[in-house]
Length: 269
Ligand SMILES: Cc1cc2nc3c(=O)[nH]c(=O)nc-3n(C[C@H](O)[C@H](O)[C@H](O)COP(=O)(O)OP(=O)(O)OC[C@H]3O[C@@H](n4cnc5c(N)ncnc54)[C@H](O)[C@@H]3O)c2cc1C
Image 1: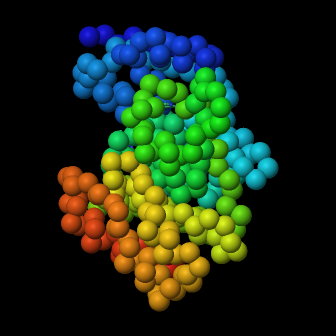
Image 2 (image 1 turned 60 degrees about the vertical axis):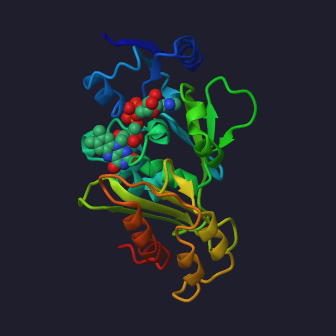
């Protein structure tokens, strides 16, 4: 079946085209969708593209930064405002993938993908949808019910800059170095001078997830061998890691505390 491509310069028009056709898919950078096209996926017949330059812009606004959902991993790596996120973007695929892979597409990417979304979860990002009335949606709420938001368009993602350097930490564990799919990934926001502690895992569930028990155990705890003991004991509490070709459930549960310890003690280099 041929696939039609519809291109729009206004997000409202792209959204209208998407909601008018259940067999239409929004096209970000196409690193996942083009593979589906090439494999003959019959679940869609139309790709909806958006050319609005604002969709691919990074806008610092005081303490917050707005990232257009069409921004690519290469753009993240080149942005001085997002230097703390450069290692995350650099960990996504190889150079060809990163030149097209978008932030918006990463939010919808099924496991084992979703590295950038894991980082956004630790940063408590908020998402704005095209045509959405009302307040932006927090990313943890989005991840809990991601399927309900299929065939909408995320227009932008907003994050607060970490106030201290080193407050944001990132670790991706993969079997193939330097680039490979994540056995698991961990992102954390660990401010020393107060503020919310957040820890998120990638590939420890069907979508990126917050590690609530770890976060609770870290409240007021020093980041020392002894201080992080309760957090490591709770490393996989409440989580349902997948079993896939990269690793079994058992393996993920075994190695999660080991890597969490390295991240918390700053031993990731
Ligand atoms: C060889 C290879 C290696 C890869 N390695 C990694 C990796 O290491 N880590 C990783 O996380 N990912 C990896 N990926 C997956 C993928 O490249 C990224 O997840 C990328 O960020 C997806 O974005 P995209 O714009 O290309 O998505 P697309 O292919 O354009 O779309 C993917 C899905 O997201 C939806 N979508 C896209 N943009 C939006 C939007 N703004 N609003 C709503 N829905 C949207 C689409 O409708 C579609 O359902 C890899 C892919 C390949 C082919």
